Each structure stands twice: as C-alpha cells, then as structure tokens.
Image (cartoon, rainbow, N blue to C red; front, side, top):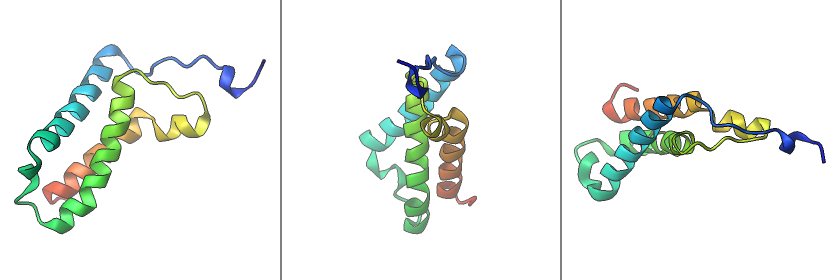
Length: 99
C-alpha cells in the first residue's frame, strides 16, 4: 500500500530540544494544575486572551517533547515545534502584559 500515510515519521529535533519542550509544557501545566491561583493578580482580559494561546502551545510542546511525529502535511504544520513555541511565547507575553 502506498500513500501519504506510508511515510515513516520520525521525531523532530534533538533529544535536548524535546526535553526542553517537555519541561516547559509540563512546568506550566503543573503550576496551573497544582496552584490555580498563580494568575490571580493578572487582569481577567489578559488571562482570557493569553491562556488559550499558552495552552495550545503547551499541547504542541507536549507532542514534540514526547516524540510524536505527524505524518500528514496539515498535521505536521499544526504540530510543528516552532509553531508550538510561538503560541506558547505569545500566550505568556499576553499574560505578562506585553501583548
């Protein structure tokens, strides 16, 4: 059987970049899970604008950190580590007040 799904998908990045992605996503996720009041002093508008971006980025970083490699073009684009870091950073910047 031949097709787009027969392409061998290998994890992207070096092991240390995947470890960094996993630590960043895990750290933020654990912080918000174990101490949900961490964002208590941040205005609601910034939290509601930045948190979805931050968590979408964290989801992509988890996928990269765990070694997931998408096989199809659209999935590779959505789960690319550069996009995940961009979303993660943009969400953190909005929450911090820089966006």
